[in-house]
Length: 446
Ligand code: UD1
Ligand code: CA
Image 1: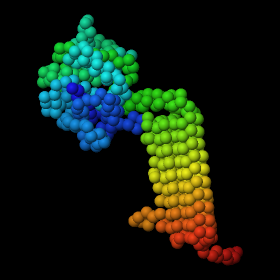
Image 2 (image 1 turned 135 degrees about the horizontal axis):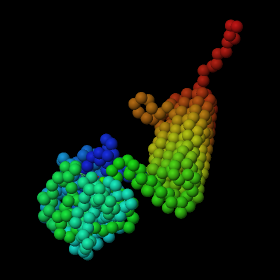
Image 3 (image 1 turned 135 degrees about the vertical axis):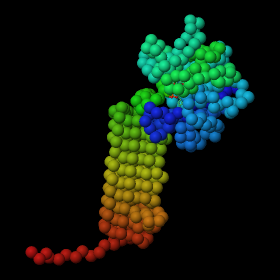
Image 4 (image 1 turned 30 degrees about the vertical axis):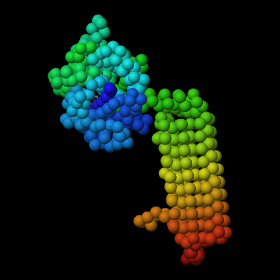
């Protein structure tokens, strides 16, 4: 039997943030999501999340996970106090309890399964992950006897100068035999510099405490402040970008770009500086993105060029050109061979094949056919103050510069709209429509 408990009740004082620490994102995913995702394959019988500080926010952020039990720790008197709160939930439980710190987000599932295996094989009371760090600052130090049994973990702030030199640190990931832990959980005190009940004090009280050193110390990096948060972000980004470079993606200046782990790229994609790919994106072969583009939750087919543009929750077809300075907003689809030019905003619209919207336009709630030319400054007036209305423009039509299309409206095919017109009635196929008052020209007196 295996139960997993993730400690996520703390405030994260050192983050200096309104947001609970475990909700801070790394490459778009919260710390707690990351910790949770590395337990997926372990198939535990129970998953418990210790919440306390802003418990509602933390619970809310995990509402898509149906297999979690939330345990409230109020007030937050330390990691040992947190684990004490599990007693009612784990009444009668007989097995191993894997305790994970909610602020150690780079951990790999493989490391956890090796820890569990080692723990079981050595029949230990507790086995926890450790690492030998060149800069152990901030971590609890691990002290062993000659036989390798762990005698004590001492928090850095409670260490003497001599003890602080020890570079073997506690990663905050423990596998306990729950029944043996129960026997010592009552004995913890809060006699330490923080007046907290430390989970680490159980180590010295348990019969057989072992540590299991990780291969890659970066994996167990804990996040206590924003410097460590940015170090972890950098680590994730480096790894992601290198792996895509190996698969045929060029980054002109990788340090200035960021990717999400849930995005995928074809080959011969070029990513120029200051370009960010967020959420779940699929980027086809030969796309050229940036400089200065942000693509979020979107699908780009092949050979899309997007310079200095935002594309959010949209689909963009083959051989299209977007920008510079275009904003493609959610629920838009831009079809093959079309062109969205500078200072154009598209929202919840379908743009047909070969259609061009080259300059200074807003198209919202619209359906545009094929081979349309939208003149500079064409605007769909889609909102009447209460509701949004649709604009339909059929194949091969043209709108003149500064046309306003007052929705709901349907413009037929092969229509030409004269520049400067405000059109609020449907226009039939193959017609020319102009709505413009007559210019008055008078000679100026002197
Ligand atoms: C802890 C360990 C330290 C270890 C380090 C590894 C203790 C006493 N110390 O220190 O030995 O080297 O992790 O990263 O455990 N939390 C609660 N309730 C509380 C307090 C904390 O749920 O009352 C949660 C926090 O939300 C956090 C985790 O426990 O996710 C760790 O707490 P934190 O205060 O960051 O512990 P460290 O000082 O880093
Ligand atoms: Ca920590």
